[in-house]
Length: 171
Image (cartoon, rainbow, N blue to C red; front, side):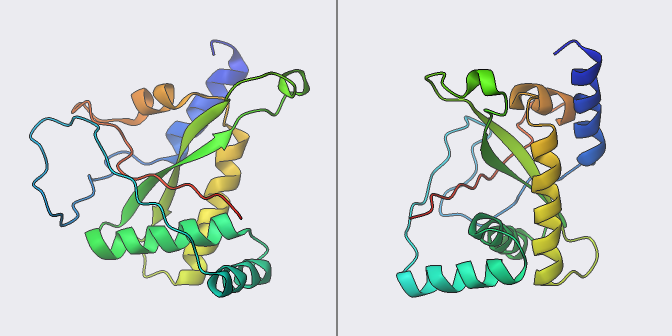
């Protein structure tokens, strides 16, 4: 991570994510702790077969995959709940782009921030294409570990730059 190539990827992360993204403020059943303890919750669910088919068909029309469609929908959901104009969502990417690691046993997953920008009055279609671009750009610089990205981009509060995550397991 000290090579010129690695530095260029770190610089690209700093350019891709604008400073000063506000914390998500979402109404909850419980008050937010005064000290962030990173104890989040997960919500698992399955799409009904007919809805999954509709998502696939919609994705096909936009030349994206179901993950991208659902991530865009999730970002719109977070925007509506929080009324924030810029939202970072952490997504896992498997980091096995080099052939020499293809047979290595173990988990090579990196969490990468994906930006959804609602600054201008954007449509759902525009958010979908924006998420697609953000994912494609994240793939090009995925070798930078999240801990380094987080240290580069977070403010002085010490909080993580991410407050929401999204993953999807196709059937």
